[in-house]
Every structure is written in C-alpha cells, then in structure tokens.
Amino acid sequence: MKRNSIIFAVAAATVALTACTAKEEKKVVKEELPIVEVQTVQLEEVPQVAEYTATVEAFKTNNIASATGNRIKRILVDVGSHVRAGQAVVILDDVNIAQQQINMANQKRDLDRAKELVKIGGGTQQTVDQLQTQYDANARALRNLQENTVLTSPISGVVTERNFDNGDLPSGMPILVIEQQQPLKVIVNVNESDFPYVKQGMPVTVKCDVYDGDTFSGHVHLIHPSIDSDTRTFQVEVTIDNKGNKIHSGMFARVTFNFGSKSNIVVPDRAVIKQVGSGVRYVYVYNPDGTVTFTEVTLGQRLESRYEITSGLTNGTKVVITGQSRLTDGAKVQLKKK
Image (cartoon, rainbow, N blue to C red; front, side, top):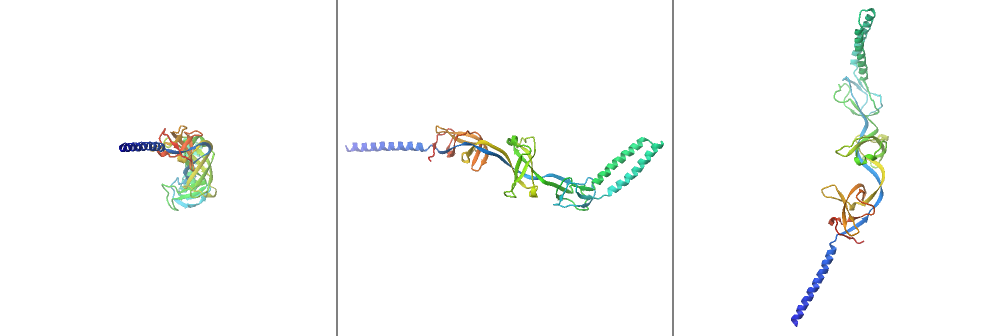
C-alpha cells in the first residue's frame, strides 16, 4: 500500500511538472514574437527646397596684358584698387610708336610721289596700290601700338593681382587681373531630378559660412542644357547681389533653391533602415494580420527627425518605428502595449 502511494505521488508530481512546463513553453513561444511599435503615416505638404554648395567667383575676370611686349613705364593702380570701365591702368614704353610714326611719314612721301608720277605718266597705278596697301597696314599697326601703350580696363571691378612693377618687361603672366565683383556668381552642380524645376531668372538665397545668419539674394542667370552622365548633375550659374561688397570671390557659399511645395508621405527617421552593402532604404509595413512586410522606399528631404518619402508608401499605412532588429519579411509580430 505504501509503495503504491509513493508511485501515485511521483506520477502526480510528474504530471504537474509536465503541465507546468507546457504552460511555460506556451508562454515562451508567445514572448518570442518580436515586440514592435507602429505609427500611421500621413500625407503632408512638404516645402521642396534643395541646398547646394559652391565657391564664389567673379562675374567677369579680365587679364590686362601687353600685346606688344613693351617695357612697363608705369602701373597706375595696385591690388585692391577699384577701377571703372575705360580707366587707364598701365602705361607702356612708347618708343615703338615714335619709330612707327617716322616709318609712316616716309611711306606717305613715297605714296604721294607715286601718285604724282601716275598723273604725269611716269609711274603705274599698280605701284600706287602697293604703296597704299603698305601704308594702310602700317596705319593699323600704329593704332594698335597706341591702343597697347595705354592699357585700360574693359570692366568695372577690383584689382586682385599685380604681377609686375614699373620698368619690368612683362611676359608669361598678365600685368594685372581685374575682377568684376558686383554682381558675383556661383556655379552649382544641380541634381538631374531638379532639372524640370530650375527656371531662368528664378530667385535663390545664398549664405556664406563666414557671415553666420546673413542671407543674400540671387537669381538664376544661366542654365547649362546638358546633363553630366557621370555625376547626373547639370550646371546652373547664379548671380549674387553683392550689396555692401561683403562677399568676395573664393568664399564658400550655400545656395538654396525653393521649388514650392508637394504633398508627400512623411515618416519618423527611426522607421527608415539602410540595407547593408547597398544604398537601398526600406521600412517594415505592419499588416492587419499581425505580420510585417519589407518595403523599399525612396527618400526625399530630411525634415529634422523625419524623412519625406517620395515613393513606396501610401497614405494611412502603418510602419514599424521601433523593434526592427529582429524582423524579417513576413514575420509575425506583437504590438507594444501603450
């Protein structure tokens, strides 16, 4: 009797232990479902702005150089000087002009004598024509010498380089470099996707890092018509209103284009995951049956702690925003209790 009681007790304990273990196994199975938090995403009006970086350049740059190679007699300006269009900036030695004037005086006498001989029948018209051609060519050469003796600036601007001094014989480099700095310009490489929206004359805003918080106005001056097949960008020339002459060539600039607004899905940045080894971005969409679906998305702008989604999601979709580390496509999940 005692032995039967012991056997019965052991059997009962075994049954109880088995039942308890079964309950724990069920509990473990339930807890193994990934716990996720989801959020319903909506369409929003998103400002379509794009920022590009570039280096400020002079609107025009002119190299003042000698076409005759004459020695520099006097340089009238220095680096930093403001000059106006047509202003004399360099005077060269005019010794060649005097010699050319003497040669032309002799040619004029020969031409006049040839014309008189033709009148009295002692010469030929061919000789007159040849002398006239030589004289006209030398007259053009004299005018060129005169123009290149006093060098003037073709633009209004600032002298940014002076490579020679008085008495030097210039060669290889320009004597002066003059830059037009009102307005200035930047050439930005704009993404191909923005090509339909960039218009001639459209306003833009420009910021320079050296002037924290200051904004300068500009507009699209020139749009290059071809797309670079390697970078998938095209060049846009933007002119900058340089009131106060605060901006200078060589400065780093940020150019912002405003293309209006567009209705797109916006999601928390926590929902977007980058696929390892590729540039693919994706989210997990929560389905009514409690499963999740791997969904590739195309990102637009980053909006502080959120992303604009340009394709891949529809209005009212629920996306997973936490707990993605254990998820796979089609996995069953449980929602985090609020």
